[in-house]
Length: 81
Image (cartoon, rainbow, N blue to C red; front, side, top):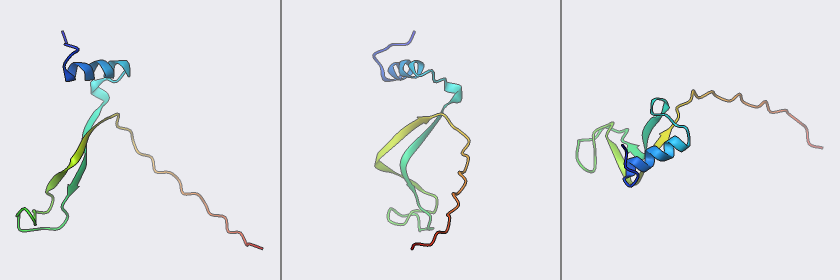
């Protein structure tokens, strides 16, 4: 039995209210930066690919969807008179 006074119990209850099931969810972390320049591996010059989380990083629980690129709108060329 799940307790309703702990964080995970509350999270599970809210997910049930929204009809969200664990098998269709993805959990990711937002608010991070990844170093793109190769450094010496020090605090000030980390190795390329090092992930650093900001102080205001956050967790995202989402239903992954296939991203469909939108079609660009054709710009009609008009002449101002």
